[in-house]
Length: 303
Image (cartoon, rainbow, N blue to C red; front, top):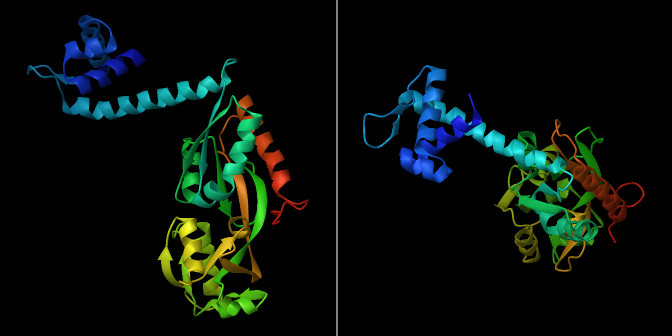
């Protein structure tokens, strides 16, 4: 079985005509006919119903088309991936982000990276949460992704960019602003404004509320961090966000939580990923960038 035969078969399933298929592939019609017949002979099956003027796939042809399309897709991904190892390759990195990182950390990171490596393109994709970024990395659809999660040790498939604390965000007129430290017990009667349920923020805050003996009264879930902050400022509820997201805010008050609510931001990649020279340069840049935005302990420098 040849790749060319699969290409012709997928094309004829689309055009449903030998002449138009040949024209689209810039080959002769006999070449298409010969390739399809050879494919059918190898499989011992009739893939195309030739009894009608319009070409149609047989039942076996429909089933085989699914396999052929997958093989063609995988081949395209493989060819694209191998370009990274060419000596004349300028470089593209497919990069995934959740909303918090995209809005507050990435602009500065992206600017500094492009200034340092103008010939490497970052193909950036925003996803709804860190779990989706991890899933895309597992599928091999991304080279790297930044995710938020609980504090843990670095693993073989990630690098810790920074650690940060989350603070409770309160309307300026809220009674709890008189306290320097706020516990989850203090929040049991509050309305919460949260990110979507699959996010680290939602799951961790819900867990901590449950540990304090109550289920949070969630007024609204949204992926828009700016919306969360504006609603807090408007007095519609409270939220709990990382300090790197709220450090410049003047429209509401933030207070430290007791016990501390920590978050870790990591650069992740697939477990089976083979690193090209471009990948190595990118990881080294992230390590240098992390040293700039964190203090000596690796904690976000909130100044």
